[in-house]
Amino acid sequence: MVAESKQLLEGVNRRIETSIREIKETVGKRGSVVAGTGSNSTAEAVEAYRRALEMAAALESGEHERLRMVAEILQRVRPDILLLNEFDYDPAVDAAALFNRNYLAVAARGREAIEYPWHFRAPVNTGVDSGLDLDGDGETGGPGDAWGFGRFPGQYGMAVFSRS
Image (cartoon, rainbow, N blue to C red):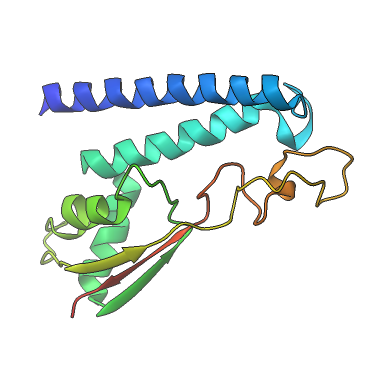
């Protein structure tokens, strides 16, 4: 388990470094994001990506306390259909399957595990840069300039789970 966790964290760190490199390349090409200024700084974008990757690692680990608490509530209430909002969408990570397998399907604090054999998630327009100054702040590239408010593509997505 320790080796798996270490390997997972190394993978997350590689993805963070790749994201930082991609953000810097984008900034260099567009020239519209100025590091350290306002809501569209490179540092804020990097931090948003870091949080998204940390969430993927938490879902994979099965050991995140807040996710365990959510799973325990769902195991107690046992809804047949479940919609989770602000469930970030990353096409490289099936977060819904990870949450289902590593949290819901694992008995929490004496609760009976629950499984959702069907789940759905899809890309969202949040964080997708419009290339326009939609929020009127005189700059482009910030979260308010995305087609749907977000610091990175897929932020504030959703997932639907069904037991039958």
